[in-house]
Length: 320
Image 1: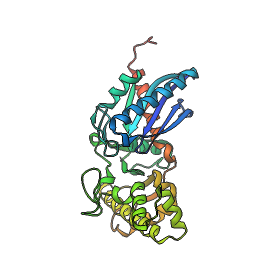
Image 2: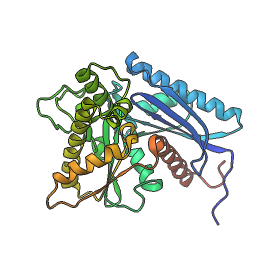
Image 3: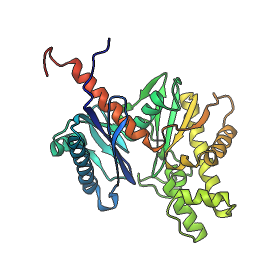
Image 4: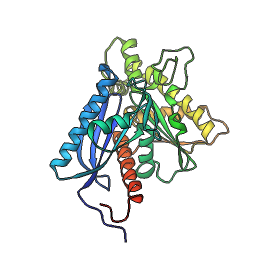
């Protein structure tokens, strides 16, 4: 029989995104006991984002203590290049981090053990175990939000490559196009991210919008500017996904992130654009993520509980 666990044990999971932070206190079944959302103050600089991350973890830890819960581990996931083995945020164009020993910094300032992961790889991990990719062995999970990144699962194993795998958003789809935060031009992020879609609509129409969801709403009303910009984004995604499918032999593409909240409004033109660029290649199915914007946070929780289990394996017999 499995060893019983203390029902008061929990982990803290935090997904630090380019726009907002999603945090939760999770039990062993990944049920949220507490949740918390806050904006990410990236405009204030990289140090401010670290400070906000620390403050959010402290708040969740305090709320857990108030409910007599025992925090066993913290899982934090962030965007950019993340080396999980070294627990470092190597580079993030969105947050301004470079070679930051983030896990150590968070542990020092919170007093809690921290596992660091990549937001999209963690979201893909959650989708593979709990969501839309269950049972598939060759998967590309793509998060289309403030930026664009992917998690690659090949032959049932996640591909990490020292943190560099999956940077789909920086595949050039428009050579010589708009400058990207990474230093290149014409990257997929400059065309098809939620940020880029909203900015392009505002620039072309003269009508300011706060986000890509408003562009999607205008698209359903037949707005010609919305249609042109949305189609451009879908075609750029199709180009990038065709490249990935050719290289990886992907069987399933799972689209998540804020832009994927549009559902078939996005998926249908992306499927068409992808199909038009494939000839002999395996033709992957394209589906919407099942876990929505909770995927990264759940992935952070999965990593945290895995760290707890790994620590228990090495704990001396009789240790408390």
